[in-house]
Amino acid sequence: MELYIHIPFCVQKCLYCDFLSGSASVTVQKKYIDALIQEIRWRGEAVRGEGRAQTVSSVYIGGGTPTVVEPEAICRVMRTVRECFQIDDGAEVSMEANPGTLTQEKLFAYGQAGINRLSIGLQSADDEELARLGRIHSWADFLVSYRLAREAGFDNINIDLMSSLPGQTAESYGRTLRLVTELLPEHISAYSLIVEEGTPFYRKYRDHPELLPDEDEDRRMYAMTEEILGHAGYRRYEISNYAKPGRECRHNIGYWIRTPYLGLGLGASSLYGEKRFSNTADMKRYLTALSAENADRKEGLCKILETEETVGRNEAMEEFMFLGLRLTAGIREEDFLHRFGQSLESVYGGTLARLTQEGFLRKTDGGYRLSHRGIDVSNRILAEFLL
Image (cartoon, rainbow, N blue to C red):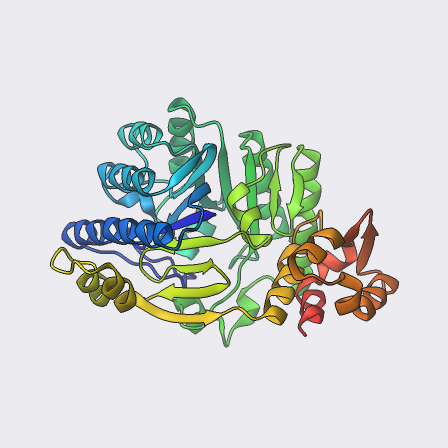
């Protein structure tokens, strides 16, 4: 089992961001941490009450920007996690961080709390591109944060990058890639900008797509990512993720192979016991349901529940395929048979044969993976596995 813990606070919301996050007063942050700790306790009790294993292989603290809250708050959260769940020896414990919010004191506290992996949101090494995104930091700020993390002993760091940004060119993106690889992080996530409805970017660029890189430029950046990172020793193990050997993000791999996980915090989603459920995104409702005055676990967890559904057999098969095929290793026929009690060929034989013949899939020793051509048009290919 894995845990995802949501800290929904940030200094200011970036112009492209549609995540459940925003700025908040210190008072609200403290109330939220108290409520989150209550949820962690109650979820831990609920898992034990079902008689299910509660061993946790990875913990991921995301946001928002978890590093905007006081470091003691993160320490309290992690202490509670260890009290309520059995954390594997050597478990991967990740936390997202933004440049400009890290200090030596915070980093020392995170290490003491057991956090052993940082994911730092750089996005670009170009200050003008960062300003257009609404980021609060500069390239120089990032370098300071990265150096402090290394000095604090963090030897497993991911750097987040984005391409197809407003005003970005293949040349400026290539410069970002090269500058980042010179720092020798263990992991790099590289995503293309998606202009999401409801964001300031959507209002600005919906009617002016000419202000963004065109499709040809986007394709150039996409190809450059694999070329430059591969030359620097990073292996692509998922469509948008690259790592030094042995430094793949275990938490994310768990998500792509449908390892059960509990999402804790405002708006967090879970996949557990063939149930998919999510918490409310309403801060007031979340805080009230988990306040000290409410002592009933079942009632409190029910009040923060926003959605719940049973994952049907067909839906689970679909997810096995289109999540698993995001990994460059692909999917294994043996795993499908073990999980669903029938062969992969009996369900997807025709689709697999056609996509293999067309060059979008490759047959492996015991399974299938996307070809290079398939990765290039992955969204369309993965949709072929909807039943």
